Amino acid sequence: MKFPGKRKTKHYFPVNEAKRVAFENDLFVPGSMYIVGIDQLIVDIEGHIDFLTLESFQLKKGESVVESDELVEGVYRKLKTENKIIGEFAGGAIGNTLHNFSVLSDCRSIALGAISKNISVGDYAFKYICSTNSLVDFSYLKPVDGMMGRALSLITPDFERTFVISKGVMNELSEDFVSEEVIKNSSALLLSAYSLRDKYSPIFASSLKASEIAKKHNVPIVFSLGTSSLILEHRDFFNEYIKNYVSILASNEEESHSLTGIVDPLLALEKILDNVDMCLLTVGPQGLYIGAHVDQEFKRETRDLIHSKSIAEYNKFEYSRSMLKADCRNPMKIYTHINPYMGGPGVIKNTNGAGDAALAALIHDVVANSYHRKLVPTSPKHGAKFLTYSSIHQVSKYCNRASYEVLKSNSPRLLKGLPLREDSLEEAYWDL
Image (cartoon, rainbow, N blue to C red; front, side, top):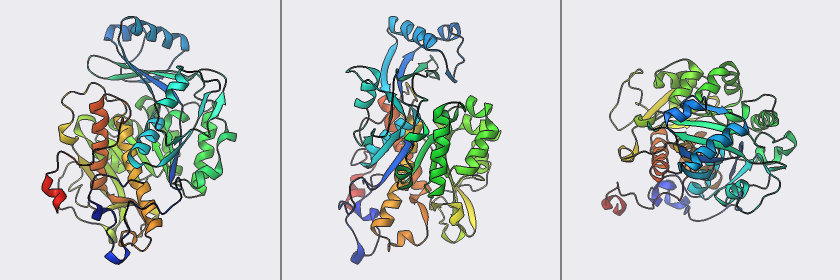
């Protein structure tokens, strides 16, 4: 287990010298800490498209829609003919997050889903497996006759993305391939709204079964909202699902608006925290927010400037660590906001996967806290039952940094881990 962020060794295990444990030591059986994710396994195909072509296929800019194999093939062939395809990658929001988590943490993750039974060298299923981090475990996938799903990520001249999905076998995960043993021993269960899009599909029932198992065994459920139109169409269902099952929610500002009906992202975040323990809310060029709960007894005031927006002094206690609301005697909501790392890349060609990288960083911090609690249970870090290892302010920095790495690489997934030493930190920092 790598620890989150690039901090000096002494900050990883801030316990007294007699009880200090070097973080390089692996005191657990490899693979003992892992996360599980249910995903519609698909291949992301990215390409440039003009507004006229988008309209000719009757596609609405910025939305994510499921279309027939024929329509998807037609769009794909047109872009291929015009040399506008810029990349074909292993995809899916949860698949991206699992991959990124394993890259960041050097920790195992398990993918649940359906994949083509017969895999040939060079086909989509083969490419999916080959381009995913080796620590992502595919042993529990359901093999199905048929083709992998495809998601066209169509980038218009204004850099907005439109997703057009061909289902293939992506919804064929059945309940008998959801293992209670695997989920109950995990550190987190990842799900997205996409797997709950169609209540008649096998993956819908499987996702609900997995949610029940996680709830039964107190495994935190991390839920990604997916796309605003889907949330708006089934708002009541998703609000009820989130209230009943979800610990950590990931959203962008359009999705949070669809979920809550509130335009202001900070006020939407406040509303979302009525039903979840923690929320990551990305706001594009304005960076990201994190909202969480902490017990009044363990709140920590920021040493940075205090800011006011739609909530006065919203970041006053951003140096606090997140807790499950149920573990707080006197819970209070805490918030932090961060602008894009280093101002963001000079040119952003594609935002696909940036939110998945940010979420992977957040999950890494949560799992690191569980790992550390098992490794050094007497550490002052565990004087209360915290959800995160770091303050939400520190977590936001880590999320921001991981997101930046995806944006600058023009890939929906992290291609490598973060650098050992950040260029933005002076050499004097490392000499202290």
